[in-house]
Length: 268
Image (cartoon, rainbow, N blue to C red; front, top):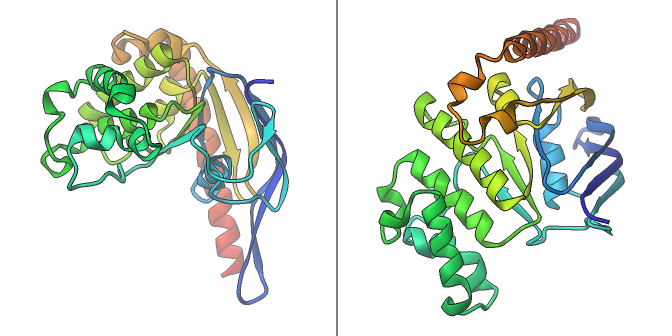
């Protein structure tokens, strides 16, 4: 059975003073192979916690996580992670960073060389492959991070605010690149973002999560990711449904933030 299945997933963090934080509660969803899902919600709603559980960095308090027919019990090369900061090896060249995974797996350059060079072509870094990471801009570093993730050929790519630190123009270019890679590779992608517009553009499916304890508040199935492949994303934003959904979700999250503020004032 291919795809990702999450059943009744909950995560509780116990604190030293005997109190606890219920980060997630009874999250259930399925994600078919090749789907692109964006996740957003107010701060503290458990978005990153959910991503870290799927990555295998955290073990849930309860519930089950099954990928391609087997239970997820820890980190594995079948799941690749792209962080907000690239987490790259500054002293290595671009090509050395992208090929790091295959080299650590004991593969020879004859096995990985052609694929790595192809990925560098896709992300537009072939001319920079011998450059050190510290010589690159932030946007170029994120391209390296994407190519490095893909070089490991994961089934699922997990992205935690991967474009959040970029300027507006670079971010739009990277959004187009994410859509291009999604279509060309057929990978399953889960992307966490705080930007409603980005979630709409990059989410074939979009989950809005409720305030803590984190749970799915609403799900949307949207046409914008498919429309944006190879197209000007500014044109996609002119779609009449885009503005409607943006305002609807912004209002939803605003109400949640107001609820959180109200709770904090009551407990103060």
